[in-house]
Image (cartoon, rainbow, N blue to C red; front, side, top):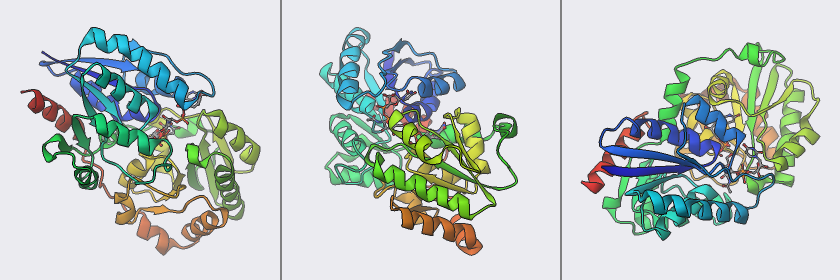
Length: 368
Ligand code: UD1
Ligand code: UDP
């Protein structure tokens, strides 16, 4: 019997690993175990509950205001004993967080094979996104099977001399999760009664480390000015629980007319909210994949992206974090219906909802 351990710890990893873990648990020839590092606590638990996942191990490492080193050390030492005891054929990790890299390293130290889900995304800029670009590259260096979501990500890996037979283009599991969730609907009016739903909804999220401080301040100021100047808009900002983000968000945006600072939403209401939005402003990685497939224009609040596909398809625009530029691009889309319509078309460069099945098939072939 093939033993596979899936390890994840943050909200986006959990969303993107959930469909895979659910499918793995139904395979008769695979013994599937789940370890959560709980690098995130509440934001992880929201996802575990929605997808009804009960981890076999929970390292429960999150601390308030944790450092990268602290997370790395706690994941590494927490996983040593588990991997030693379980002796899996393969450890599956996801994406680019500190949980991802530390878990891959912990598996390597025990000489367990590593499968990297969402492999090969690159900006080629060491510090943007920071530390995600290096987390992903370092994980790739340890990986035995690379599950690349797109041809572009596979090409990045080939350029790094990864052998062709170790790379499988699978699509992104985020689309598996999204399609399953978007098929349902959530009564947002009950959840957020203070919002005037007849207006155009602007959805804002931001959390990246390279945006902490002044860039985040610029983003918030530009968002505030946009809402002030377009009275037919309401801005909803589910604020990330990182105190570096929430403190500044409250300083700049609290108690402002038509701006709603709310707690992080469960995935189902959040997907419903994306679907009800007119425009998405974000520095999130996952939302650059989800919003285009829902036909929602996205302004990316970052200088670089490791997800060029939707930019090329025209539904995502890189705007960076300069206050004037963000205001200008946002205002143009709110004023000019033609420009808006050109961006608002559904594209799906990231997958067809069947990525998890392809990953499992590839794992079986690898060990056959
Ligand atoms: C992390 C990932 C980032 C990912 C993001 C997704 C790293 C280095 N960063 O960033 O790649 O895009 O998650 O959201 O791996 N907190 C809570 N409750 C929660 C979650 C966070 O209170 O459920 C607070 C804690 O004070 C914690 C802080 O947020 O210390 C930062 O969490 P951390 O995982 O270190 O960084 P993120 O900014 O969330
Ligand atoms: N998300 C959510 N609730 C929220 C905000 C985001 O469920 O209040 C989901 C979103 O749909 C996406 C993921 O969380 O799938 C993105 O997480 P985040 O922006 O924290 O991380 P990133 O994608 O940048 O790694």
